[in-house]
Length: 304
Picture 1: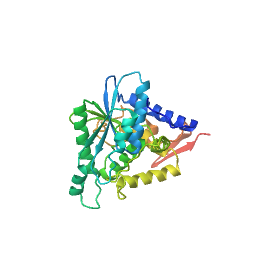
Picture 2 (picture 1 turned 180 degrees about the vertical axis):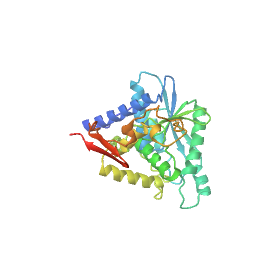
Picture 3 (picture 1 turned 90 degrees about the horizontal axis):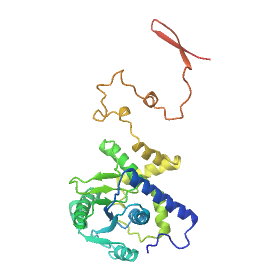
Picture 4 (picture 1 turned 90 degrees about the vertical axis):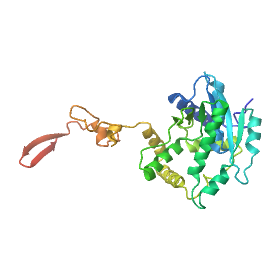
């Protein structure tokens, strides 16, 4: 029997856990991430996010109205000092099906990337290829990653600042070969809540010294920027994420998404959005009246 709660769990922790499970279930439902008969490969790095992902999916598996299979997977990249026995021991104790995949990507990354440069781009490409091949070998049609809401927002700003694209991290996407679908069930969960949950669950966390700890990562700088914003105005990260899910192509500037060329007076648009009114709409209809027009002057007066 899987132990879903720590000893002496407080009511606050139980509410937090239920909130994370509810948010994850909603994301899965909104994007149709998991269906009847799916085999889901849950990628485990050993960090807080992937640990939380596995436990929440196990909880949902017990209560979901559909049947699906979970296989936990960890990629041992052979970096020096990596505690190779921690995850296998933990997963065995947990009683879930798992696979440990060994691939020396560490030496490849160190060989190809100059000292001082970030390793993420090459490292992620190597990992992705191995994960896809493993999923195919195990018959998994879904690949679950532990990215959360804050990761998605950070990716949006990385692409804005350095890629000149309005592009984030999708909750669900098909792989290039169409053999798998990648899902991010934690898309609606905040990093803060996941971290609090992981601390209480006392997961055996394995720090990554290949990518996430590199001080010069641009992602880390974006994370710090968003953290500052959140301190100034709590809820700002969530508002940005909600904006990602509520896009108005007619109020951006991408001609491939909206037919601006053929826009005419015959097509009406939302004027409040046009003028950027994001506050509560004021009742100003008829507040100004046309007083008259003379020469180069047009005058409006207040309607008292």
